[in-house]
Image 1 (cartoon, rainbow, N blue to C red):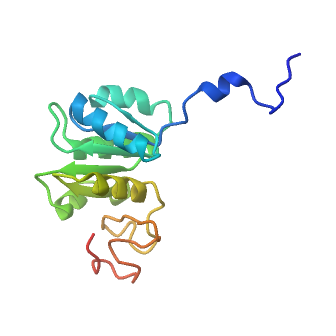
Image 2 (tube, rainbow, N blue to C red):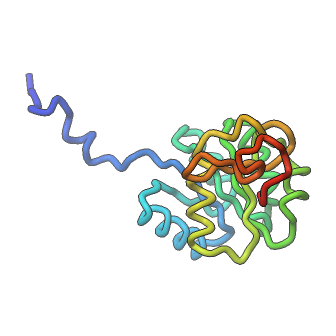
Image 3 (tube, rainbow, N blue to C red):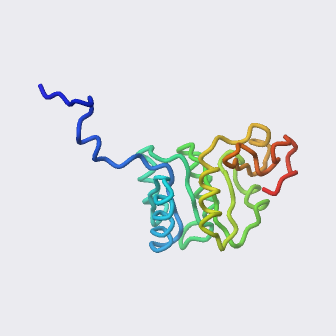
Length: 170
């Protein structure tokens, strides 16, 4: 019998950590840039070129959040976020240049949408939204049809901690 001093099989140590975020940014270049940026910021991330590939990756159950571009070549991002939520229970962040936050919130179940980023997106906006999207939703706003994001201080951007929906800048 082989015994390891730290109680761990060395092959386990060589595996990458489970990914938290799955990116569907519409093309290989955007996927690679966003994946690299998130990983460099300490957030495990993978990317998929299309929903077919994303679906196969989601079946592994390694993702807590999907970041999806609204206008993709064959699919619509808001539809992808809804389908991912219904099948896998994984919420999403929508990147769009054509929808407002309010329009996006009306088109998908509130529980499925953790945020909307209006393009063009800065690296800081992406990182803040992903970090917030990985947090639990605000109990005051979640499920009331509002887009809710929590920031590091556990303050909802929709109600800004007041509990009154629509008072924030979310």
